[in-house]
Image (cartoon, rainbow, N blue to C red; front, top):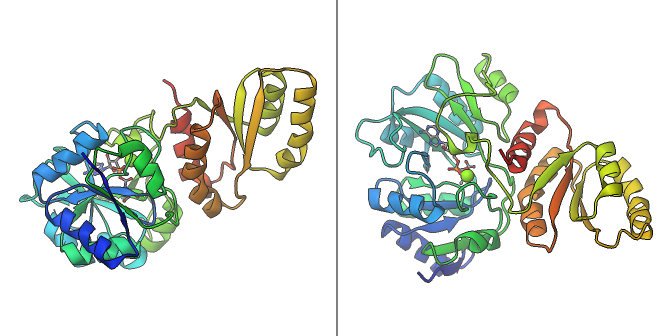
Length: 339
Ligand code: TXA
Ligand code: MG
């Protein structure tokens, strides 16, 4: 299949993307979190094609993107008041709400689950598409199953070219990390996937505790241990551990630093390493932004870039372990998992 490349800032090309979606085609679209692989959520054949293009098992449900909080009634029932309160505070934005699926909604989009995940995205292009198509748009991250999420159109092309109808290029995603998923189908709200909106922020809005189980049985693909993976093996190392491993390795390693301590010591370290004539080893390195939002925004794009280099491994200096960083640490830990 020939994948059309469309520019979101060209009105006719944006219109083309909307027409393709209305016709049941697959279009990768920008959102503020990551690029999504969108299709008409009410069209079971279009939904089936999402699973096929990604190579994703059919029992891994999709998020449905909607235009307005009232649209929750089109897809869900028995909606708790907390959902409207959260919608008012956090939508449009990187929060996905899990609600009881409305009986008429085709179960293909929820992978057979009785619940449905809904989100209003903040990206203006995605909002325009939702208005133009008047559809609910099912959209998982636009990457092959278990691989790195895309934050630029070129990342989508690298993974899904020829497998989807079009890619709508809307530039880089501003958040760069998938939405927080909050389950509202039980009396106590619980986080199913950590994300840019933290449990404590949600707890403050609702005035109640939010459960954040480390392990839960809800079948979500992002909950699998191996996920968000680059092709090259990825390791997360503490600062000192990273320095000592560097002295010993004979690999070609791509490094991602965070701390200033490492940044100031490493150049010297690398020179010593080369001087020790460990001829087979070599390094490239990137300084990750120090603030959480900047780090998250750059993370996938850095990993995509390093993964494409002629290297043996990616080593990442362990970022801070505070609640604010929990989504970054969650994704890194899964990216590093080889079990
Ligand atoms: O930021 C995001 O959420 C992005 C953008 C495109 O909106 N989407 C995204 O979708 O990350 P995806 O499919 O890559 O991850 C969504 C996660 C999956 O792990 C899926 O299993 C879970 O949400 N999920 C979706 N619907 C669900 C449902 N009905 N029950 C349980 N989990 C669900
Ligand atoms: Mg995904």
